[in-house]
Image (cartoon, rainbow, N blue to C red; front, side, top):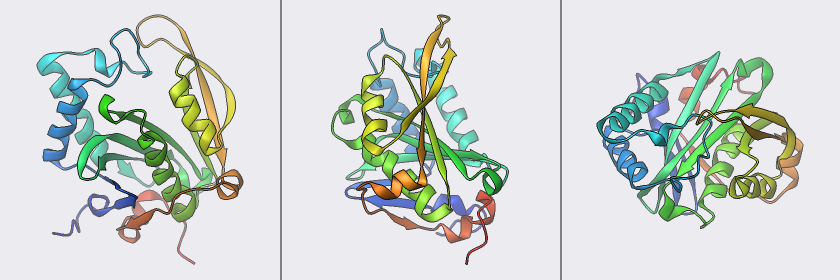
Length: 217
């Protein structure tokens, strides 16, 4: 059934055996179970907001509440597409892409997480490339921004492999202790200059106005 009242629910990105789509409620339940099973070692915290530190029913409620909010947080001046990532049909994690005042700034930001069973397999790089293809090749973005703690080499390797360049340092304290976060920046020119996967995008045209896209043509 087409989601005529909320077109982003029909948006699909596909590359290789990956599919990205906004999660329905069954998908959210599966993703919550995946996240509960582990996203990172307990002594580490790769996220600026320590959402994985919560346990039990509170974790489930927070997870569902956040995914529901993200699913509706789509307006021309401020939007986030919080995609569920599937590998060969199996839920693997989430990859988001968002923007503020996109029609003017033409800048997007990204964030992600993967279940531990899918880490170290190239999935993180490919799912980020999928949303970057959406941004640069279909939405008309000029800049993509991301960030990772300086002690998170896996994320840094993904950014470097795609072509991001360092763009300053932030300080955040997800567990009450200040830590440095490296900011990264990728330009349209660099994106086009490097090898990248072919990404099939379905259902975008109906989302054009909601994402503050420039008029077609």
